Amino acid sequence: MSLSSALNSAVLGLSAQSTSLGVISGNISNSGTTGYKSGSTAFSSLVTTPGSTTQGYSNGVTTTTLSNISAQGLIESDSSSTSLAISGDGFFVVTAANGDVYYTRAGDFETDANGVLVNSSGYYLMGYELDANGDPVGGTVPTSTAALTTIDLDEMTGMAEATTEVGMVANLPADAEIGDDFSVEVEIFDSLGTSHTVTYTYTKTAVNEWELEYGDPVLTSDGTTVTGTSSGGPLTITFDGDGNLSAITDAGGTDVTANSTLTISGWTTGANDSTITNDLGTAGDTDGLQQAASKDSDGDMTLYSVSKNGSNYSEVESVTISSEGVISVTFENGESRPIYQLVLADFSNADGLISYSDTIYKESNTSGSYVLNTPGDGGTGDISAYSLESSTVDTTTEFSKMIIAQQAYSAAAQVVSTTDDMYQTLISAMN
Image 1 (tube, helix red, strand yellow):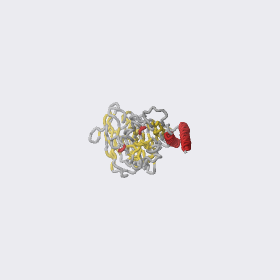
Image 2 (cartoon, one colour; image 1 turned 60 degrees about the vertical axis):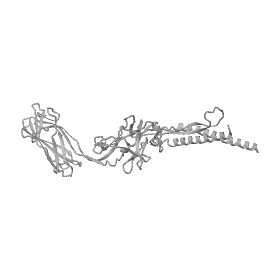
Image 3 (spheres, rainbow, N blue to C red; image 1 turned 90 degrees about the vertical axis):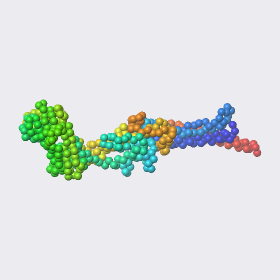
Image 4 (cartoon, one colour; image 1 turned 90 degrees about the horizontal axis):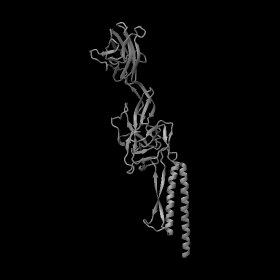
């Protein structure tokens, strides 16, 4: 082995240990970074004469920096409902301000000034919109990141839901006199969320026969101001000898037992016309209206329940994110509805992703193409709200590696110094 080859090996060793120390330094400095994946340095012998069996030939060293992207970090709790952690495989799909798409496990998301979810690195979370039934808007589940959108919570400023269904369970007294009538006040909401009251009036017209009339709606707040015009009545309600509902027919004699409707037009509030479907029971059953003797033999009607949908206008109160990645908003009136579905990108070789920054990755030929799945499907993990995935750095291990790198660096530096001394000796001998 010549002095020059020994010097070259030592210099390569210094360079390799410098690289290793740089990786160790990066790991230690990111030991508290959410979603960070620790890196490592792999050393390989650099054979100067491949295939040679000669002993003493100088071998250098080369390094490769590795990142264990697929490693699972510890899941830790957090105080924010939009802090998200993935337990299992998969990556959040995020986008930069310029529209480029990336992938990350750093789920420290919060709303920016515009209400869009963004993490601490400035990348925006992506998903797709859901309708009120929890189905994709447009009817198709996206399979490409190009079909995803950023999560904008500011667009959900409030909601009002019009009443479209009313159900009633009651006993109409068989011992009432013909001509007796009983009223039930039903609260309904128009499409703008204003509360109104409609009076359902039941009048006994014959044995086993009643008539239902709808009153015009009035403001619930004062009980007197008429706010629209009701139509759809009168309805004829008949019962059999056992008190079971036989049929409900409209003014034209059509059986509307399963689909009788109350229509309200001309809302003074400016709301759209309302069509409300009544559920008054099933023919041959007592699951809605029935006829039997009054409870206390006083000829009074007994009202068991009135159910309805619809709600007044209400602001958003809170945001929740399920383990399946469904983002829902809950309003002040207690109503809740889904608005977005998060997806996770899965790769056949996640360790082959390209590190764009400490916690942001790009697809590569080595990683393979992404596959989009909802959390918990297709082998991807579940999402935990109020949680963050911690860094995979073990500081104890990194300090141990740092000591080894320092010793190796010092040894390589000593070889350089010794080689220099030998060169000086050789030069002196030649003079």
